[in-house]
Length: 207
Image (cartoon, rainbow, N blue to C red; front, side, top):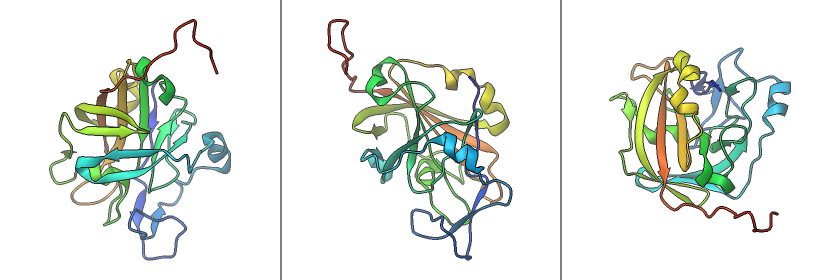
């Protein structure tokens, strides 16, 4: 399943009043024509205040882990201060050992800060976290195994990203550009489950 990740390139800092804020409480704005329709927002079925966290301790990142659906093969996180597990891709957290968990988040430009900004090195044009970095998703402990940048138009066809691999985590954000302007590439982090969760045996009761 190819999925176009549509985030970040359309978000900028603004001095105008806005209901949208970054991690520092500063107003951010979507560029005209990029706001999801009410129908798309309904289909996202966003779940907030889940009580779960997304953490990368070495990067100083600790944000809420909300959840959402991809809609029409597009992932558009609705907020700029949380990470979002994509429920209709891969597997649920309860079955993390059996497949891939997908998380998406915004990085921002023009001085604004989203969760993804902690994970990218804009000047170097790379991820800011190294292989072996600990990533904690709702209490599940992963270790980073690799990172890559992929042009946005190529991401939907990146079969390795969308393969449902046991015990894997895929984190996607946008790579901002040193000179500003809309992001043209995504950074994709992959990680491996370090503390596998037990899976139910056929004789176990199912809840």
